[in-house]
Amino acid sequence: MKDSISGKILGLAIPNIITNISVPLLSSVDTALMGQLSAAHLGAVGLGSMIFNFLYWNFGFLRMGTVGMTAQAFGAGDESRMIHTLMRALLLSLVIAAFLLIFSVPIRKGM
Image 1 (cartoon, rainbow, N blue to C red):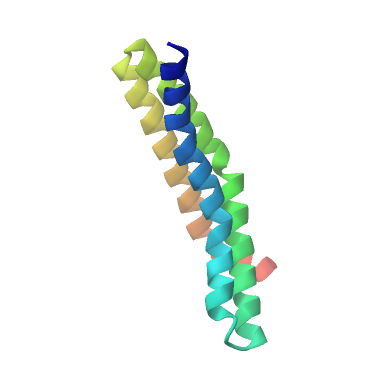
Image 2: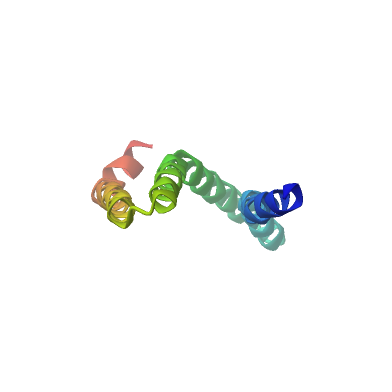
């Protein structure tokens, strides 16, 4: 029984480990590909990577919170709560995206 539980945990952990390793690799691959160009191009890639990482990790609360709450609802067999949790997260992400789109020019000019 212990082996099956360890196997299940490992089966859940490996995709998460790969995902967490792959995010920093995005910036590394971009830098390696753009490294042949000028310093300005490389600087632009560095800045873009910083912005991407900032947004990815700071909005991770939405991803992590939704996964936990959805998993609890799924485990309890409560399909209605699961759907409501997912819809709430989707609505929140759409509101945040709309806010960023609407205020992107003032935010950019303020930098």
